[in-house]
Image (cartoon, rainbow, N blue to C red; front, side, top):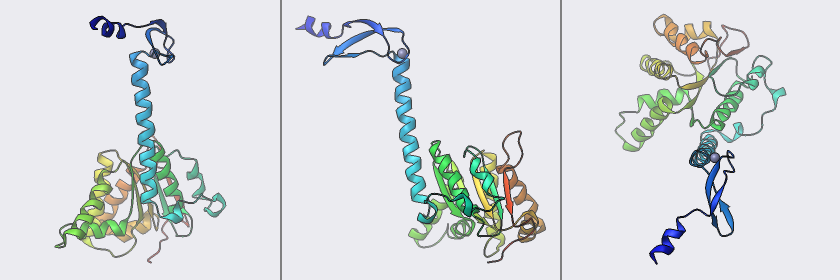
Length: 245
Ligand SMILES: [Zn+2]
């Protein structure tokens, strides 16, 4: 009995690993030759883990992306100034500024999907939703509070964020401060961020005022500037223009 078991552990021969070609011990299991060196086995496990991660991230992208933005993009519907962003690979941040109807949010969701295809867990939130979540984080209703805290955590910690419509909607000092905190936190932790804003730098400066404006804009620019590169910003409708709605 003992010797039978010992025999089971003995290899049936030596042959090339199908992964790297190095000679390894092989076993015959159900007439199939099972031979793989440890590094190739580890690499295969890693490959499967990456594929799973990519699948999970893409599925999460479907969850956080409105159905209208999940449809295939039609480049001719995208403004000329925005269209070059479709060549980006989703590995570095990008910013879109200008009037609505230019397709900037649509393109930003495409880049968020490319980030997810790289295995980065995505999240998307509008600046107004983020501001609301920040206001509700101590809400007396635990359901409201829980949702708010979840939104704040995702916005801060997700591996790829789309922050949509910066500067849109009501202006409050605490809301602007929360936005600054988010941008600052993501910048300091080097977290991939895409954003859209309804106007260019001049409009944002006016929108956030002389106290917060320059600091907010600085962080917005930092977030979309690859190391040693130029800011990846796409402006349509001219700088300085903006919308109030
Ligand atoms: Zn091998």
